Image 1 (cartoon, rainbow, N blue to C red):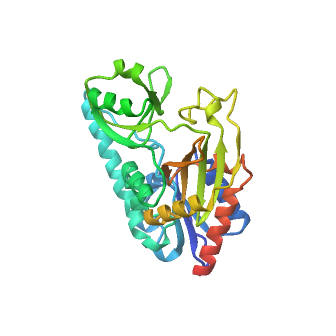
Image 2: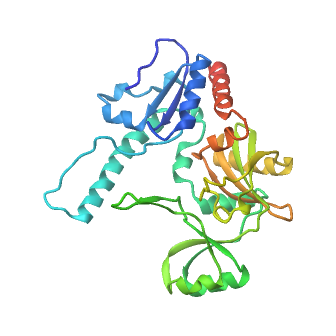
Length: 328
């Protein structure tokens, strides 16, 4: 469990997880280098909690960054008298709800103005709402629908010959009993693929497949934009979704400068959402149009930081230092 130092100065609070958080690890190293008082509270630490008094107090925190909640519950063991799939799932939902209540208590304890991003908005972020808001701010977006029938899909494809199918929420990763891993990625659908579509199905997000010259991943940090061009269209593996990484033939990635007109609209969008950091995905079409895809306030930014030599973890640490110095 963490311990607060005795220095009478506001601290940076980082809510994260213990593993798979390289960017957070680097940020903490930079904060130590700059001798900044900070607390990193991983979700796993809550399983060692002895009393609520151990949680960070509002008066001790100058700035708080909600990075991650948790990856997996450590040491959670239970046994049912009879193996029952529905009971096991219900119990899992219960443990998630219990943990979420405790974690959300921390979010409520810290004053709203101290959060880097509005945590409530981060947790309830709605992809459809963000697309609508982006369009309201003057950004181009793909034609987007939520459909439930094969006929509706056929009508959509008659207007947009190629479509992209993606989750309404976030992608998940599955694992079978043989330790095989399966990624849920965006999929291309055209008239030939209609034969595989059932007559009725669960409400699904469908978008026109926007032709791209390149993809652009942007990290936003308190009014500054750090952009990277990804030449994903030159590789069949990554053409539809750059997350389908080709480790043998990686995409070429280079630093990129956004036009002021686009960065101004993106900043207005981030401010409307209450976000001071986040990853933004764009497409640049062959005709030179910038098309907005989505925002992820928890998006990985190491993939932009290191190839482009932006040293974003250092920039973030310096930004936080400036914030707590002014607050103190």
